[in-house]
Image (tube, rainbow, N blue to C red; front, side):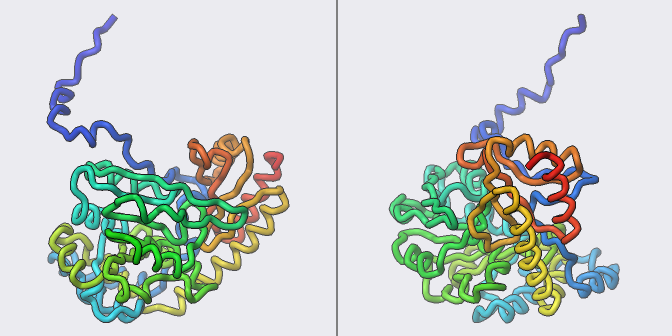
Length: 365
């Protein structure tokens, strides 16, 4: 019998931080090839044709030279599109996850507290763990058609409170008045992650807290290009806050955190409002069609204001997720309390909806 030789590098692990060794790490949605991806909430339609024009016109110097470290032109365009006073209210990041990392590094010391309504986006927990901070979960008050913000969220003695709005994984929307009230109650920063808000805004013009940014000095708002702008592969996010906060965050971010190509395609995407609005209309219309189809199985879900549904399907949820994967369709399932009987299903194209429903029928739903 051959003896197993010890890994000579394993002893080097003693030099690593205990927080890194102890935690499991964030698990992104599965990226299996050859499957229809209805598990990670990308937009079903392609980005603006102007994005493709930018990519075709890339010059040698675009890649040879460093990008603008502050993404000034992108921030100027974004200020106009999103209605903030100037680029000084915006930080650009390598996806909104990068913006979150900058935020955590700027605010949190070891043993500081972060509070979130639960369940929500799991990365909030992971970033707190890596920072040595304490994460506090406060359960949403769940009703049949929506999830309500817990009233005790403001009383957690937290340096940061994060609310995804619309929430992931529920797709539910907290009213802006409730968020503004929470901001006023907090002795800390309130971070509203609006990754999916463009889908909500297409039906409810009052869905975003961003117009109220100047009224709340402790308010931070996140947006991403990964969902509504169909640029998940481009990795671009924006953080909005008062200039005094942005100037501090600028000192914490990586020197060149947004590459030149991403800055250019971000500008192109922002400037093509017709394509953006068309994709929002398509998504909302297809979401309604998906809801009609899935209701035939007796499934239920909270009212969706995003590009996905959190479906209550019962004890078969995990098995259905695996069986659909075998048929080439990925949906999201979590083996954890409160979510183990649910599937999160992204709104795809009409042909994706039809095929998914066909497979579900074949599986006896």
